[in-house]
Amino acid sequence: DQLAKVSRLPAEIPQGADAIAFDGNKLWVAIYEDHGRYVTYHPATDKWDLQQNRELRNAISKVAGNFTSPGGMVFIDGKMWLASSYGDSYGWIDMNDPSQFKKFE
Image 1: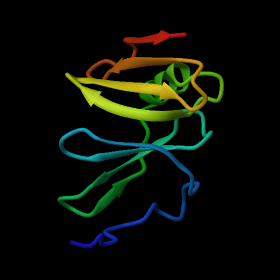
Image 2 (image 1 turned 90 degrees about the vertical axis):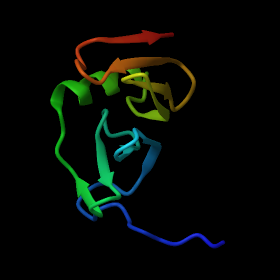
Image 3 (image 1 turned 60 degrees about the vertical axis):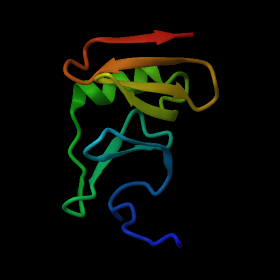
């Protein structure tokens, strides 16, 4: 078995990926120190989606701590769980309603 390159981050976004997680349908990539910015990749269609849900982006930025970019990400039971890049916080965001989130410091 060998690893194979399937895609790369689109050139129009910063090339620093800080956290990566799969939600069961698409791959989410948090962009390093970019205030909650993220992109998604759909493996079934080989398409990147650069559109931002403003409410979700703001919640990611808030939960991710002082540097506004998560260092870890996972999806559990409809929530995006994040850990800050430098360990100052962690928390979750409700993916059905990103205005609902909880940050632990």
